[in-house]
Image (cartoon, rainbow over all chains, first blue to last red; front, side):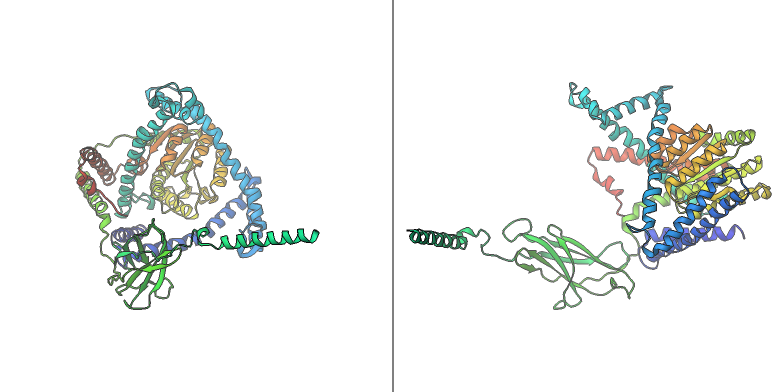
Length: 215
Length: 406
């Protein structure tokens, strides 16, 4: 029963939604919205479980003084600070000018921006590793990257103004992006689409049941 | 003398004012004062049920007024009017800009809603062309009523493709069940899973499994759950802890149940620790900060990044690389695949993510579905080649066969 009930629900919901995709007539037309509403209701309740889990893990960490328990204190304090200010501000807590907005704008937002900014350095370090010409594929990657990067900046244009129009850096970069890159990307997209259909079929038909335990 | 001078000034001012007043009101100075006419009305009114919908909408089309885009009575907008009586009671439903000659008049099925649009009720339409000065009404359209369709004809190709693919899947599953040997192309990322878990066991370090930023409704996340189940079972057998920080509460709950079931399956339920599968936050970069912290503090031997990833992919993978972990990644987000290829040791590209669970399971049923996937790809390749040839020789009928209206 532990596996049969979820599998039956999955199959019923899966087939109903597939039929709803092809049949616009009621009642199938309403089913997708209905299931979407149910999902939202479940998600709304699940957020409380998430909060409880967050507090449980971090309080436990502080209580048992596990390594990094100081970070947990910051997490708990941050959580309660935002909740307290949010409740004090009332229904419009997220509006411009509120204290909650101030906290978000002056604390969370800069932290998020700092985290995102790290990406610039990581792109450089990852590129350094990826563009080393160790074999044929890596060399092709290096050359393509060379043309695309240089073709996207003014210096690439100025360096190749003496060449015929089609051989200038910008045009080579455009050609790489429009043809080999697009072709490769579409091939991956077609594979992904087939993979999605295949996985959905496996789950709906109950062939894939690893996530429920057992083979 | 002074008085005379003042009188002359007065006379001059009077005539000057008269001159301005007279010429300012003269017909020659007023360029807009041409004869204003209402624009010609829109023609050929048609109203019909909107195809492929749930029966709460009517589409109206008309020929643009001859004064649309030209002439002194240039049309600036059209108003769509509706009534259930052809002779009276027309009310404005919507205004559209000049140049537009179609409108979908739709609503919802809830009778209490202000936007209610009834099915199977006749409606008549007129369109009013508005110029800057003046307007004109079209003839009344023939009656039309909305009704729901039983099949979305614009999706026929998708249905045919799904049926073919399902037939392939069932066919190969039956073959696999009969014990027929099915060749499946080996994937380096999957082959490395055993080695990665073995390494963690030898080092006595945990394994970090990241399900990405997707929700439990994303197929990539669902595929990741199935891989998590396989990997958890292995970690249970090897007695290696697995950490799963989650970005979504529902994902966390499903992940907890998945890992729990895997440990139960492996015969080691006592080793399952619910606290190892935990919720962090739903905010993207706060999540990244937390996971990076775990990587730096715990130094996991192996990191799995399988699911839906966005801008955080490279930050996570580079931090893992700096922490010295073996990294296996997989996503269906095309923009992130190059980052994973550059920064992790093994990458499951696109569809390989969906195939990974079947590869790990090595069950005939799952392998059969993989084989069907390969045949599906072969069919797509053939269609692409034929489509390319048809386009080159202007054989449009072949291309139209694949037309989809969503």
